[in-house]
Each structure stands twice: as C-alpha cells, then as structure tokens.
Image: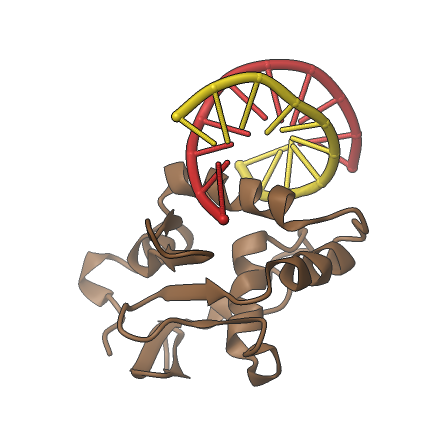
Length: 134
DNA sequence: ACCGGAATGC
DNA sequence: GCATTCCGGT
C-alpha cells in the first residue's frame, strides 16, 4: 500500500507493521543493522521458527526458543563471534527505556514489541491518524 | 534467568 | 546513538 504498511502472517491471525520493518539493512545510506530490526528479520522467516517465533495470543509478543543460537546468528551478522545471550539480552534491555520492547514477566525468554511506538518513532511521515490496523 | 550501572568502541 | 563487554546484585 501507499504509505508502506505490510502485513505478515502470525499464528493467531495477522500482524501489521510498516515496510521498513522488513528491510534487512536500514534504508538510508548503509547504517549498521539494529538488533530489533534483526529480530524482526528472523521472525519474518519460517526457517528460523524453531529458533525464535511469535507467541500466540499476544500481539507483538515473541519467544526466543534457542537463545544461544539467536546470539550466534546475531554475532555472525555483526562480526562479533564472542556474542552470547547474556550480551544480546543486555542490548534488548536497553530497548525498555526507549519503549521499543518490554519483558513479559514470568515467561522465560519472552519479550514484546511495542509496534505503535516503533511506528511513531521511526516513521515521521505517519501521524497519529494514520495508524496501521489489522 | 533477569536486571541495570559503568566503561568502552565505533 | 547503539550496542558490546563485564559484572554485582536479585
């Protein structure tokens, strides 16, 4: 669609978020890949469903099924072979204050995206009235 | 497992 | 600004 709202299949039904969320590399220039972007990239692909996947029920919630494998893949992308889940999870924790992610308390390896915040922060052409709906 | 401060690098 | 590394604390 014009404006750039894409739709992806998730176990419960549909997930909608903007096109830029799908891109492997950040569009302008060639900025470094960001972790939340990489996470969305893995979630998008079925081949990684056994490593990381959307959680049923809660919109934007996902479970890391194989933490060390996700860390290995992330380290591979960033050329950081010493990457592990301890370090990766610290990076995820920095997203809490930015309201990009938060932890689902009580559920192991489970986090939740705040898509509306991501859209609001990173898609300046979108105002409050043009929210993406399912 | 999960949290968040501190130092450091790019 | 966005992690990476390390780590003491819950």
